[in-house]
Image (cartoon, rainbow, N blue to C red; front, top):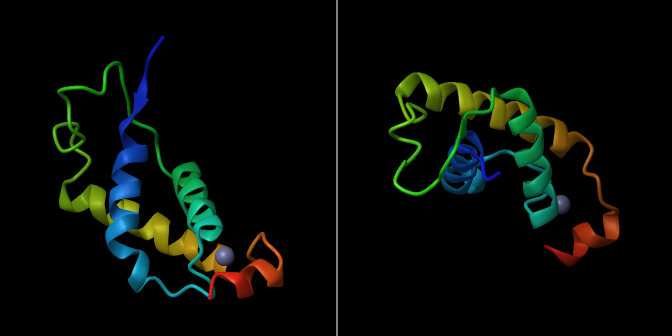
Amino acid sequence: MNVHNMMEEAVQDLLDSQWQYLNLSCHCDECRADVLALSLNRLKPHYVRQRTGLMYTKAGLMTEQSRATILTAIVESAKIVSASPHHSQTSDERHK
Ligand SMILES: [Zn+2]
């Protein structure tokens, strides 16, 4: 069985474009993965059977409304991760 969550793709894309503007205490890959996971937990998944030939734009995930919803989830998640990064201070230093 091969299903694909289009929401994951949409969140990753938006996270890519907004990452540098997010107000985070740390911008390392670990924190980024945390923000992605938290955001996805807040959003409704959008599964499609096959990824090929169906972009998420067609799945209706890039309307202004959807973008706003996804961005809100990302910003909220960023606040949580920023307040308590899951990694130690040392790896924080490493990524500076
Ligand atoms: Zn970090």
